[in-house]
Length: 493
Image (cartoon, rainbow, N blue to C red; front, side, top):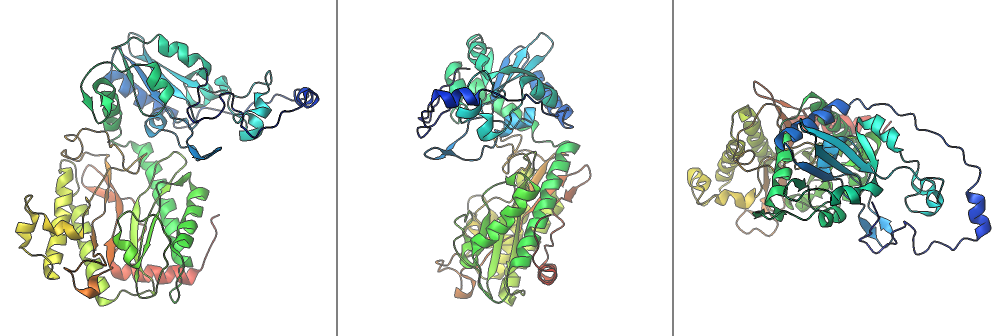
């Protein structure tokens, strides 16, 4: 595919600060290079990706499907963010390289899958040492044959994609849009109803992939468990470095967890929330520029993304000095009870919203006990009221998988308004948040925020808590924190 940069950079992969090399140097650089192959073999997860492509193929017989991974994103000037492949693309291929595009072409009985990719730098041009994509700059890339062996997919050079896109029939092609502007512009949307910014036919492709992702197979559950186990180790790392008698910065704790995430996985699955004191009442606190204080609580919402891009999502609240005060414990125990009620409700056939309502009723009862609800619990739970949400705000659950908020394009009747099924993985994360400025709560409650979050697999008979390796009950949290501190700091290894 002819390169067409959209970020102002030269299309040939050079940079504005690159020097004009003399011919003698260029001639010298073109000589004396040994060609070596990569020792590749089929990845063990290849059959799982193939099964997903087959399921997607069955949903759109006779149609061409185009799924790009996306391009690198500029961080500042001539530096990019680390590339993370598009989740749907990775779900269907297992490939992690930028700019690649998966095309499923109908063949009469299903689809032929082809991965269009940028192959290794040829020594026949100067790209290998002059381009931002060159191997001397970014490392050895796969050849087409190597990638095909590794992923069990037919491959073609990315330079051939323009022609392939031009031959696609309008009305018989669907594109996963919003990931690659070159692809979006090459395949014009077919006229139809529009929803959430995507043409109707293309929207149906995004919906179909999202709904395939609702049910996790055994391999996916193992990936999530791996991510959760690394997350447990990350929380232990933080607890071991958390002083009981003095403050440390939220960013120090964020960094300790990030070290574990990079060592044991791909990265963090989302921006870590490390909220000390009143910062715990800010639901998506990601500035992390505060500091812990003995006597206050520390809320941490963090998850490791493993090397196959499945992520954990866990929240724990710790008393910095090692013991909850009576009031802190009362709030914490109320949230724990609400979470346990939600977890206990989970089984196949239970409505997704019913888990939320189960947890929320427990929180509403706790708020009534605290003297905060201006109405009865039943009145507060009425959909026409929901005044209890002033102190809890968010939903109790979301799907979890290759995205921290997985399956977000699924239809409401299959997700938000649907029933849970065996193989679903969802979070259960109720919380209570008393804002420092809230004059409707007693002063001693202001600035207290508590959320407890775990990752729950729906089984045939109920559920399994994948993150049970971290304690949840207030007394167990205190004991665990003391044990971690006694063990002392450690480096991943």
